[in-house]
Amino acid sequence: MTGAQSYNIAAHLPAMAAKQPATAAVHFPYKHDNNKQPIYQSYTYAELDQQSNRIAAGLESIGIHRGVRTVLMVQPSLDFFALTFALFKVGAVPILIDPGMGIKNLKVCLAEAEPEAFIGIPKAQFARLLFGWGKQSLKIILTVGSRLCWGGTTLAKLIEPIAHNHHFETVCTTADETAAILFTSGSTGVPKGAVYSHGNFIAQVDALRDIYQIAPGEIDLPTFPLFALFAPALGMTSVIPEMDFTRPGSVDPENIITAIKRFNVTTMFGSPALIRRVGLHGEKYGVKLPSLKRAISAGAPVPAVVLERFVKMLNPGIQVFTPYGATESLPVCSIGSETILQETRFATDQGEGVCVGFPVPSIQLEIIQIDDQEISSWCDDLKVANGEIGEIVVKGPQVTHSYFNRTESTRLAKIRVSDGGFFHRMGDLGYRDEQGRIWFCGRKVHRVVTPLETLFTIPCEAIFNTHAEVFRTALVGIGKVDEQQPAICVELEKGLNQHEQTILLTELKNIAQSHAMTKNIDQFLIHPAFPVDIRHNAKIFREKLAVWAQEQLR
Image (cartoon, rainbow, N blue to C red; front, side, top):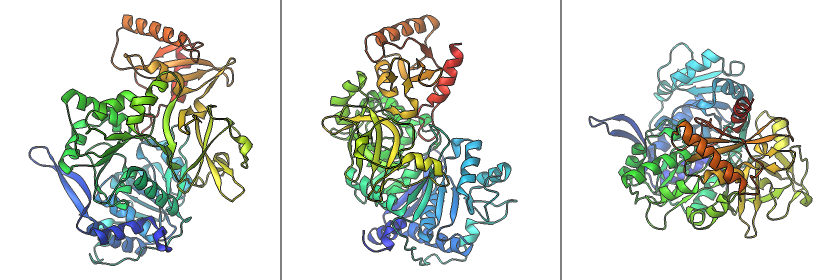
């Protein structure tokens, strides 16, 4: 990248609008025809650029300008795309929070973020008033839709006097200037606001384009709203599917399949829960998706059987890629379904962890000794040998440098390096094999430390997940830290009667005895449905399961 202006992530949009003005940037289903088929609204690249220019001018007129932290609570729509790019164009700092994380967490997050402006649909504005979100800091209110009693103005009124061909000069932000605050899913604690710079976003776009060979003109189906924003920056057309974005595991597979076929989608992103659901439907009805050049799934490990099922819908040689990363750093590693299905799945089933592939070219990844305390500065003595499980730490241009208003969390998560940079502690455990590939073994906070040994979630659970009646399992620890009793919670593929459950538990205990890693586990509990994260419906809330398991074993 050259020139100051190129560091603003929004600069991709006018550049693409100049190259392919008539190409569709986004299709959004907004109503149904008489046959209950979706009717789509669309923006071309030129239209999206022009509309975001108008909104950018309007935002500045009401005081939303460079550096102004702005909550954005708008559902995926044409307005969502135009508003987000407008906020980047003016150099404002959008605050993006999953609305499904719960009222209590939302209030904490918004208090920490100290927003000055709030852009939301009427439902979000009503909730803001009802629960007192941001009342100490908010000064500017903008409603997308009808405004009632909460003041401010509406998006429609804001842009009404602004010409459709209004030119807006994108603000020349720097690479290290704050671009957005993205809150983590909170799967292992209270959500934290990762501070994204424009340089972080640009590094992500460059990495995704290079790793997956994405070219302008492709068609993208994003089933996670934030990932939808990468499509215009990559020159792709984004097709927004009909779904509840807070419940990807409950998606109607027909809605996904119909959109892929209608628009000849070439790439799609789906959480493991969504990929599983679509794959089951595809297997049942013999569905084929010949237009897809790749599928991408992230958020939690994707079981091999899920990949196998989904790949059957694709043309020969087309893969499902499972990048590894986190809100604070993405992508970190990547691996394709071909390698998983032909090689690494067998090691996974034997308790060796889940292979997440090689680190991407821009990332320096190290494995260090497991330590729950702060590590103030880097030294090579922290590193462990290949094959030894430790904490994964990463350094690179897509790695965020801090959490907003979370000094303590930042201190615990970053390791200063003498060159002025830092390593980010992923909070994940894993090891590097002799080929240089990384194997994921679970979250650091989820390890179970017994008087005899330390057990890691992903390796242990995989051993039991091989049973045909098991959908998934979760290792939890019961009792005092460092003196925990391990237990395996079990979620079934389908319902079993009491006799069948007794047989299953006996079989799982026999499996445990056949592996050195699990031989000391003798508590197995069948749970009706695991609590999972809102964002991906795939990360298991093991903390909640541990409380439940302790109650069951009293």
